[in-house]
Length: 120
Image (cartoon, rainbow, N blue to C red):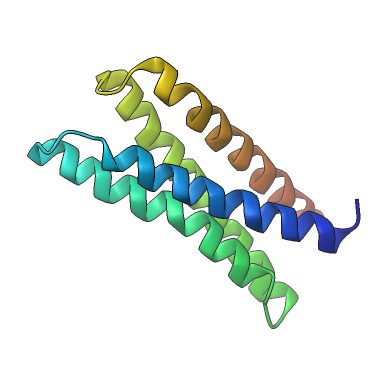
């Protein structure tokens, strides 16, 4: 797969992840604690795709590298909030399984891209 096709597919994948995060958060309870978690999760989970899209339109290699680092950081934060949500058992494991797996995969992808950029 060439870089342009990979980039387009990853943009779509991160956008779908953002949509799934929003949908997941929309069914959380309306307690004060859940509202805080919802806000954090929506911010980090949607930021991954937004920053990746910006990375693909970067003006320089340094700008691209910076945006990829942000993607990696936001993916890690999203995974953290999903771990909290999973441990709280506010939603059934069946509902959490797929999105949690996708968060792990996105973190692995952006970590790998970041590591490759650091070697260059």
